[in-house]
Length: 339
Image (tube, rainbow, N blue to C red; front, side):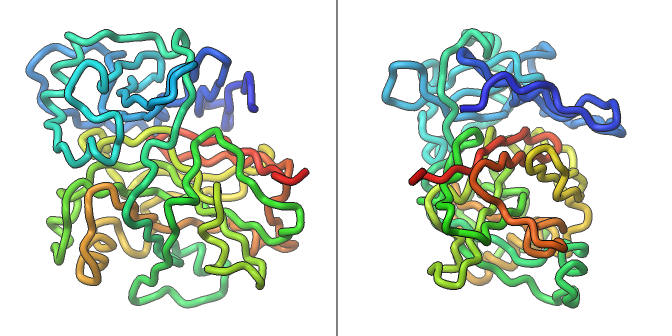
């Protein structure tokens, strides 16, 4: 288990207060922009305090409990309010999305709910979504990712799939036997659908989105691994929260990065996507019906281990950190489950 992680800094700027202790976490807080951009918030009907929980949803389990709960977390990660015991909200994110709560009303209701200090709550963080009906990832969707592979920029997106058995949490271990020598990584902006979606236009597409989260697409590139190795157990860390789209200032301008053992391996920005989020939803909705809770991975920037010289694949003992502006950070250790 990872404990007492210090602040991560980049050129003297504060990045993420990623700190896990036995009695809580504060790594949900929103990333400060290098060039601050005002974040449009829903029109308030009551005065909201700075540290009130926002529509940043997490699933968790309190100590000595077997059932999960749903909560909202404040921007700075210090406050949380449980929804599943105070409202009619389902404790299961998949079901909560289908309940179609009005976020304005939910935000207004926070003033009447019990607000807790995150560090005062003893809990286990769970993946924010656990059993989507579909997980679809786009290939080669960043210009620099195409360049490092020495391939042309695609004219049409191509996709691969993952399965929900691969999902694991933002602090959970990635289980990789030492016999696997070609385990790669790729940090993605993940889109969570909020409505049933079929044959939508790009203009309509984002209206069908519930929110966004960080995802890491781990893949075993061994020749003898079935299904390309994308869907092995624990090969899909997600979290730590889902940010509702009402709090997302610009999904096409978010920095994204991966660190392995403290070294930056990937550093990009979603503005460099070849096919933007709205187009990907539009194109997929013409192939198949998208349902609430479905997850779309929007591509990964350059820096995957397979394309570095020499190659730099993951191995047991490595610590992989995945972060996206506004969405939080994950920290997963690669282990050999048979050691």
